[in-house]
Image (cartoon, rainbow, N blue to C red; front, side, top):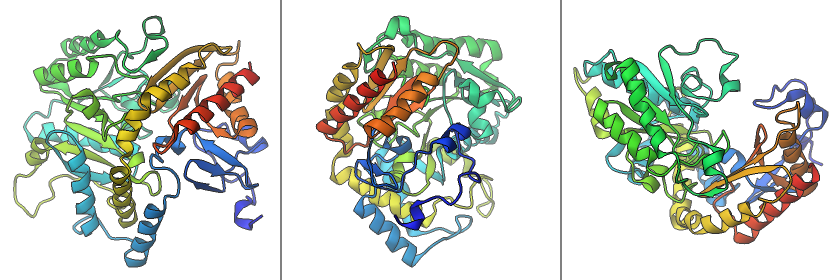
Length: 441
């Protein structure tokens, strides 16, 4: 076994979003990956049911992406994005803008979904400031929303464990109610019929705070990290109308839904709703190099382009914004999506994927299954006195005994395979997961 695949010590690395003591007693390690599979240090194949963390949409270690990164590393390892730029940054920005709907034509690069969210929130606040409406400082998120781990993201986010340890967060934040109701939506394929009216709660929040104090509303078109909650029919369109009525910016957090997960470049296209800002990350490089960004409508960008031309318009950015290796990976990834028609493929596979997910409906402990695009959430009954234990056991059993990677959030299993998955591989993912659920019942 190559030395590089054997960890010398498990104690130094503090793993993120992981029960560290349990992991270090029985590690789950990957040494390499290709296509639809990870491989353990011992050489065992693990079918990827999650696209890593919702990000390897084009599959693992795709040769064109690897080659593009190598070429770029040989030519230019790093270039500052403050006052300077590379040609690839402009090319990638134009390619991303071409995929976005409407007049979402201005792209600001960062390095992750968390940074993308904080960037979008800052742009929204600054936009109102430069237009003379500096009283608009309030931000509206949604219960069960996930917007990364920056202070802005967890403030507008609505997942309790992500918030409760970190104090008061940002002031002046309010939340829409979550869109999920098991009573009305259980075992739904696609967008549920019930729940569109919940968007009208924004009117109540506006009445409480007054529109003149509200800068932006941020929502995930599909709430992914909380367990795949598709938007109810007409919900997003109603949010758009309310925001328009009150001069509030609408932000779609598409870090998960961007780049094909729901069968389109962006979920905004699927739902026919154009937000003012879109955040993206994950799929832009198919997970190969960290990258994120925000796409803004033309009018937002133009609002900043005033005053002396030598003065910085937006005091924001990152050392690694538009990193050359990330830009190279992004361009190669977008080529794969286009040439292999992976967005269209995801849309075509959606009915087969939904049927495969629903085949688990009768298994012990399954409370609900939700599907949209190539994403599924499966709620399991919690063990008495030990919430999250059943989900953890299913995830661990699936890895060790079935050779499949699934994602767990409490007692919910989430699936989001790479868009290159075949029908046979989709069937294999759900067969293996089904056996894991039954085994820990």
